[in-house]
Image 1 (cartoon, helix red, strand yellow):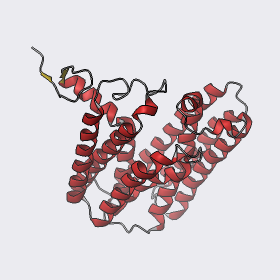
Image 2 (tube, one colour):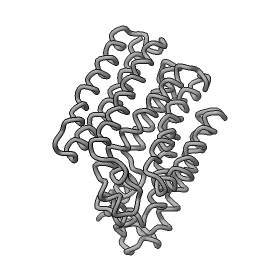
Image 3 (cartoon, one colour):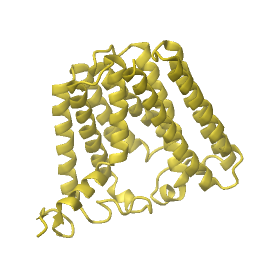
Image 4 (cartoon, helix red, strand yellow):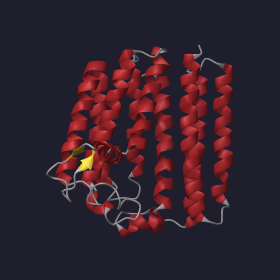
Length: 304
């Protein structure tokens, strides 16, 4: 006999099993994005502390919960817009699987739990950076992207905060040029990451009333702009190798090789005949690249 749980605010009054609840919570918290945020925070911690500790795991858990909470709150804020887009219409709120009140309570629970973990596993500066990231994402960027197609640029600031949180939690100084260079690298990566996603679903966003770059620039212009940001992302990572963050010559070489690979693979965006294929392909490539860079950073510390 399967165990089920029923919550009154659920839109269709269904009783969900624990497995179904888990799937809903993971979708509400945009778990793939939240895990990437957590990974970048853990990388920042590892780079300064140079070891895996309980404090690192506690702070990473706090970042994960806070990221899930912010993503859940974002879905609550944008539920009406999500219902208008093919890409997002099956999310828990627009699909009617969760009542908005339930989602709001879940998001608050995630955020509160995240701050509790961060209070135990970090310091006041890291806690303040976490608060800034949540406010910037839910209180500023979420609304700004309804006003301008260039919202992703100030919005990308959010991406540079998690590694800084990890670095500070591990005992590093928040103004250390090394972590600022890493945060800048993540900021640079966020812009083409967001743009490629938006460009791949441009019609969806236009249907929902969001400002779109496709209404401002021609396809060729968009391709060149996006490639320049991708090139800048690779260049910013190569600058990191000059600051002495990475100790292994082999890892430094791997970072250079990864940068050249990114530029080579994404250069197809300038000549690809199919826009949709080009944007989708490069979206995957740039995500693989940032994961590879963080993996190399971690390996450098763990093998030292």
